[in-house]
Amino acid sequence: MAGNSDPLTPRAKLAVTAGKAVAAASRAAGRGSGSVIGGRVALKLDPDLLARLAQNLDVVLVSATNGKTTTTRLIAEALRAAGPVVSNALGANMPAGITSALAGSSESRYGVIEVDEKYLAGVARDTDPKCIALLNLSRDQLDRAAETRMLAENWREGLAGSKAVIVANADDPLVVWAASSSPNVIWVAAGQMWKDDAWSCPSCGGVMQRPGDDWFCSECGFRRPTPSWALSGDHVLDPHGSAWPIHLQLPGRANKANAASSAAVAAVFGVPPQVALERMYQVQAVAGRYDVVQFQERDLRLLLAKNPAGWLETFSLIDPPPTPVILSVNARGADGTDTSWLWDVDYTRLTGHPICVIGDRKLDLAVRLEVANQQFQVCENLDQAVQACPPGRIEVIANYTAFQDLRRRVGN
Image 1: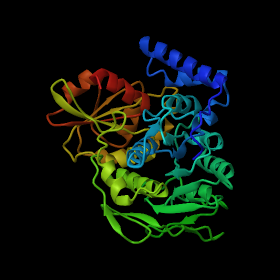
Image 2 (image 1 turned 135 degrees about the horizontal axis):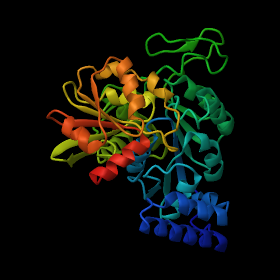
Image 3 (image 1 turned 180 degrees about the vertical axis):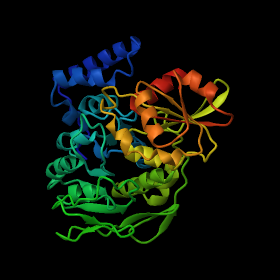
């Protein structure tokens, strides 16, 4: 970590002040948190501001298609055992949002930063991270994001020779290939439920062999590395073979995997697994995800699922039939306007659940459910859908902007 001298020039201080003022005006106008617009203004006034703000921090970057917001939160909670933390906890994960988050704290020792996959290499150049966590790569926002192999190549090129410790998922071939250009990698066996983006070898294009949890390419020899950390049931196995229990308030196997990766990151900063995992228990919800809210005298659990891999994980943690389920899908800019990914989701996993469909693209989703031979009702809005659901807690699954719409409607 750099010294504690003030890294901010007069120009940088002006940029921070202007960014905060614009963000406050945006909030006052009811246009959201203002973090993105505030960061854009600040970076316009000082293009080097992000690097200056990160100069006195030990930085962790977290990137993935799924789970990065939750993992960022878990790592931040763990590192608070060692000192104050600044983090972009609300998920504004492009340079403007990251700049806003770091500008909000001058006293922190650690910066725990979620980074959009496309921006990882650039943010890593600016922030000189001590550690980078790479969790997974799968198809997402088909109109905006590059094909997954291209994203992996961007990571591989951008992280080549990086001084950072890379904590990477050994079970995702795309992540392994991307991380392998770095000299210092800690491999974590975190699992991979969604495998449809990892059947061809990212190194040579050959067909991957996937016996059990292992994987390898018989054509070029690219294979799963030996992990030093692993998720094993309800425990994290550390490099010494000790098993540490995971107690989370967040549901599902995916969050246990996030906790395993977070424990490995915390250890890089000297926080023992037992301490890190105990602190992670404090996290009850992440930016509204997993919250149970009351609406129309019913309990609704809010679940975010943005792409095929995310929907698959979410289906694995909802209550069994006949629990009612509301599905909401939009296709706005932040979601990606291409909804063809709906056809990659296995909706037969919802068989037996009463289903209601809402959102901007409810008819696209209705066609997909019809083909999957599911019983469902198309509703105009959340109010109507809740009224149509039979008794019991309702699982509400939505993609990104649909999730934000729901949170506003229920006052969350």
